[in-house]
Image (cartoon, rainbow, N blue to C red; front, top):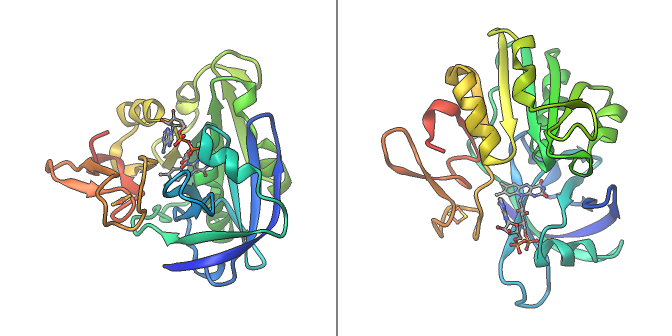
Length: 249
Ligand SMILES: Cc1cc2nc3c(=O)[nH]c(=O)nc-3n(C[C@H](O)[C@H](O)[C@H](O)COP(=O)(O)OP(=O)(O)OC[C@H]3O[C@@H](n4cnc5c(N)ncnc54)[C@H](O)[C@@H]3O)c2cc1C
Ligand code: FES
């Protein structure tokens, strides 16, 4: 884990609610594994206090890519950082990572949760595995990373609950197309993860959790969830990825 000042190379809107930030971070980029995340300081003042957590969605030439929805003060400030500015980044963080075993991998992303799976998709493909993305959201405005999937040449299907884009329905509607030989990795809203847990054998289901975090490296206990033994585990440290039967959502 490094605490660095990264140079913002790009920070641009890619849809009505989502930004893509590219940060030069040669001290972090070569060491990132799929599933890991960074804590980003969104302001040089104490308002707002603390850093914000973001998945490392992609890596190219020593730079990290973050895709983020503007949902509150922190992400709004982040979206105002100009090209060339410096940003404090702590990472890479997280020890519990995705399972890369198995030949066929279904990656299920809910809304901006897709950003937690994209690097995994690239790594699996590099290892010669079959990869398919299921990308679901409430409505069209929450589908902001389709271009990334297209540009990277991945196979995917999109579902929106209201039918405003892709197929109408929930991504769980598509699960019958994938038999038990597929390893499933998912990231997104808790409701989606719970639904997947009910429908898929938890031994082949891996969940990346996005609990609210304060420190990001195991000291504040702000992000804990209970494991199957009833003990608390830190999402930022023991996670963020857990096999589905290891945690209680
Ligand atoms: C490991 C991890 C990886 C993440 N990766 C991404 C990512 O790649 N892209 C992205 O857009 N977001 C990601 N998030 C969520 C992101 O950290 C929050 O959206 C961000 O901290 C919000 O900051 P804010 O100050 O703008 O909003 P706040 O003012 O803090 O909150 C605004 C609203 O968002 C809700 N909110 C804040 N944090 C979360 C959360 N973790 N889960 C659910 N609701 C939340 C609040 O309850 C509130 O309603 C990730 C979170 C974690 C823990
Ligand atoms: S965020 Fe502090 S322990 Fe996880």
